Image (cartoon, rainbow, N blue to C red):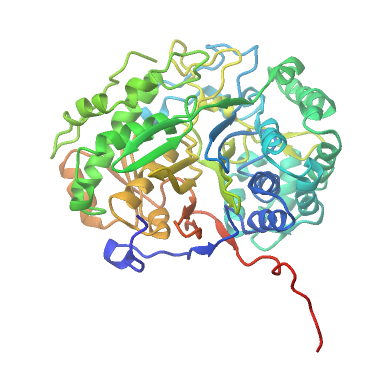
Length: 561
């Protein structure tokens, strides 16, 4: 399935990174320091759960624009015995939230449907949802890890206190968000010293964050959900006009869910269920694409790209109508993932003409600033976890004295009342997060995921197609140029050849060139001989770290003679 090596030139692109291979553990995160932290934890006796939580805490320090304790996320765990568990640590609306909380902007563009007057669902206290990240990370550690919370927090505490070098990627994000960061004196002091964005190579120290992490190491997650840290969060948000209360925090709980499963060609696809879109709609898109010969058409061809675009447009039409928090909306998972429904939709795809798609079910977009890690240990535990503050630097608010950034998860809701994705008290945000796993004949073959907002699950789907239909190596599959559409503009990454845009425009697709679609993917491939391959793509600071070797053979003695 991984394909032969060194085929990238024939595919029309070249890989910018190299894969790593090991037999005793594999770590792929979106920052080299976080990958190193996870490797250290694993080498000290921790398993994949311990390494993942340690890496997430570290990422909250070194990728502060992407992930934080006050954010949320989805973790897909495969145990050593082959059980798949989804831990839903997504944020939810405060109890005082309501469908008319925001005033939507008037626009006919699909891409503008979540914009509101004064950006109140994006910036500031009204944009903040009840956070689930810390609860989710601690539940993963407590139920599946070996080490203590204090153990896995120590590397992040050191990074926050002693500092680390700012990468060009972080520096670019700070510069791009400078206007939003300047709204908060604490954020400006940290990221815009003397009014200028931090430069790559400069040291970033976060003493308040170090103290907060030390508090959590001593008191556990209760300090947020029932203690002093939560009181400070509620106080800061309340002074700024927010809705969150101490009761909202006390009532928060992580949901343990069963995955969505489907089949594509001769592989089983396993992913998160609603309120995540990925499991349902990746299976749906693959079911549609099963009716077309993508391998024969070839990667990057007009036919293959047209079929991908139409499958995405179909999925987004159904997603906007039906995929939301299952506690509030009845989601027709079985229907959306059925081969029969996909066949009916596929039969309507015109070979030479783009179609305008409406939902095929009775019914009802996120930010791109997220992070992802994929980690596997020698015992067979595998974790794919996607976490976010939602937008870059979240709501552009720092909770006073804590060094923690607030999320802007409320932006994920539809600001228009009366729809499946509209705001409701206690409702979980829906998400495109796609921590996916791919099996063949019952054996795990690939685990993957990436950041990128609503572009996440279509990008994950394309990687699966790259592996199965185009027979790429894992490195090729994660780095291959991507496309994206919700049914409007068709985004093509710049690396795709110019003629492709012209050919698709002739079929009615409104083509738009972009430097990248979604973010850096982190994936692990599993060979039958026990070797693991880790791959990260060029779109982020992703770094694979492989562990091989091990302890000396039992009974080995050292002698000078």
